[in-house]
Image (cartoon, rainbow, N blue to C red; front, side, top):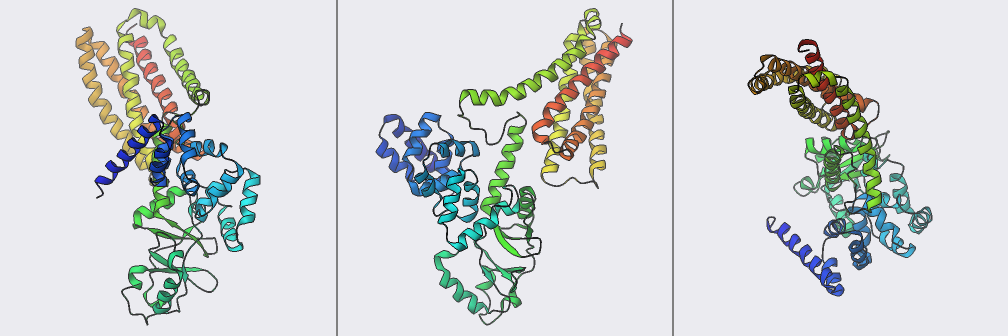
Length: 452
């Protein structure tokens, strides 16, 4: 079944595209609303703006809220701008508290206040408990809707309590939270334990103390690491006093992991993970122009270095042919180290205890690789231009650039992280500048000293 599901989804989406192209909107509406909200969100992100507007108008009101939560931020903002007050109010009905908290912060202030006023006291309290936390923290991820039990009650009482709740039991409930009378988190009661132990036993006798509460201020990357390391499906969130304030479920963590992966991938090109593939031309042009401008400045800097050795290049034409090799090899070596270091930062694997070891290890790797490939290039260049000095020169320059690239690729992302700049976004541009300048400077500088 699991192998067939993606094929079936793809087929349904293809049929929907065909219905839209043929103009049979009623058929398209039926097919569209038979899809899961996640599939609708994916379809909307895959459509040019004109078609997206048509399809969004076909989505039923009961799906609007779920779809808005699942689309990328930029697409969500575009869809919200097309909705009137009644549509926005209807879209927020029935959403989980954590999803409502995410959505409400992007709505107009007047609509936000109207939504808050429409909630019952209990739900408003829960929503207001989530709103103060940043979106990328445990508090921002959590859902305050939890099932709590006291340690002194028997499992029989817990079972009767769950039967009473019935459909009110939150999704992804695999554990019940155990708290004391003051609401302080004590541990968890797994449902597997509940159904396999004698009903006359108390919660305190069978509860687990292994699942620690996640502080509400933790960033989402740290939360994802906790879920990965402990194979969690859900986990409690606690405030500074250790009181239970909500829970995080695996579906929210999967979103964090996906967004982090997209951020790393898109960041290397200076783009946001929320970039709308079909955003208007002028908006996309403006965003990309910034990084093209930055890249132009760095390229001009590298060109300025080359320009200072114009006389050397004129006398030894082979230098113009070979110098891109030095810069390119340094750029690749540095990118490998940079990617590894950024990954370590994202996973929380780097600290003051092991950064020195990583720097030394990468310097050793860079040195060995530089010796291997410098020898290869030296032989090729020597035979190519029938000049041993040219071969030795490029080999030396490559060794210098690869070692510097390894050092910068390790130190640069950690330095950017310390000063509050995203290394995934700025690291590759700065690294390329350094490796280009060092590569050209070392190669042309050595040529000036020994060949001219």
